[in-house]
Image (cartoon, rainbow, N blue to C red; front, side, top):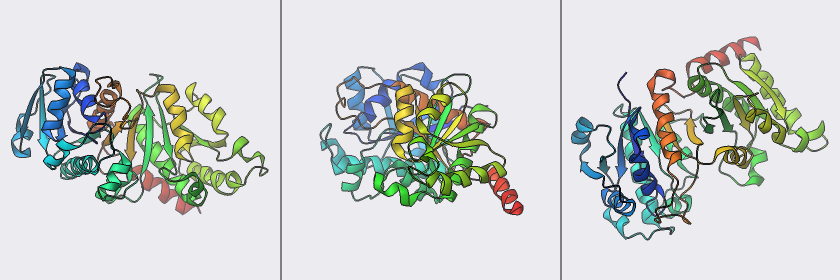
Length: 359
């Protein structure tokens, strides 16, 4: 099978995005299973090449030209130029609307190419949410922006850790970028069920079999039979039962602290977390720079690193690159027939249809 063609977006150029791209590009592992093109400003990418001293040659041209000559080589970086030259004046490690606009332009350009079938997937370097907002684009992050670009209503963020090698572990989040005080009113049985179905679909694609899924409780001790909150009884347990009727291998709700330990030890392949930090903290403790961010429910493949713009490291030549290499590898895997469709389609629709008939 031909290597899939992936776009790597530069993210916010004031952060570590450009240097992790250039640093990862120099590693043969990035090119083993895919061909890639960088989407961003070639001047920014050249700065990263100079910083890291990789000696890579940047080739910048129109998509019509680049798409015909893209190969897998650590020595040549094809760069599809987009955005304004104003970004060249944005200072490193600062929240600058010019950086936010550059990240937005690169993402939109890559997403449109993927939606048109010109690319088999996109891998995104980090953007800074405050800079994105200052540029006038009021989205909580990549996930929500991509969902709007793709017209997706059922979507989710999953952090995937390809470890232990025998199974890997995916954690999907029912609620995401919102204040903790808002989590309670955004939880519902339907939302929990939807995220579980999305998790089942994507993990099946990644590990080649139906995953064993554990569902987190919201409250300490899973609510202790209602003593510490009734969301487990009222919202989460009904979602688990509905998911079982939709033919998922799923159980819970379990207290999050013990569930994550059991998942680490291989008892579960996937976990449904109720809110952002409940899933993120556990995965990042297990493997901060090996975890991959996957957007579920889109008609295109999108992966990313599991870290942010890291202003404390930006443009010092010290940023970790392994996460981006892993994000490219996972995107290639999803694009190569084991799950190019990570959306809420086919088996999910069949499961919901059977569930509705059983009611």
